[in-house]
Length: 200
Image (cartoon, rainbow, N blue to C red; front, side):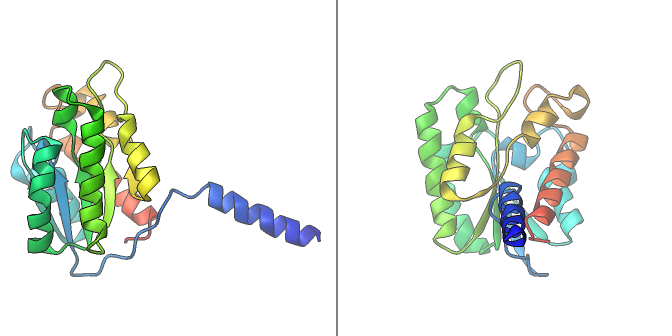
């Protein structure tokens, strides 16, 4: 009886320590689509210094940089389907909505657009890793909508890597963009999370 209780306790403990949904292992020839705005495009760094370029080196896999500077989530939503059809990625890394937050668009609009982007990928059997983006402010932390959407839709999620990078002056090129070292920190955090989730 004691042994069964112990096994149950260990099982519950392991469940409570889970980092959320796991990911399928990335195949050696997998294509990863990094989708977003200027944080993905790599503003503030040379093209080889963007987080998708640095992540491609860490993973030794193709990472498509599908970042468009200045884009809002409604524009991203209109653009995503064509890219999914074109590249047929195994994994979508979604980091979008910063311009919505900077321009004070309704959070409900961002919520809806993120959900539709995620549905587009999930309906094609594409796995997703989403990054939280902070709203402007003195003390940066991921806007709550990202975690809410990730939890409700069962999407793997990194909450504060962007916030942490933008909170460190040495990792920024300006107030809202990392520099090459900052994008390196983003790539390293994503790589580490993919390891934890079983993708690599």
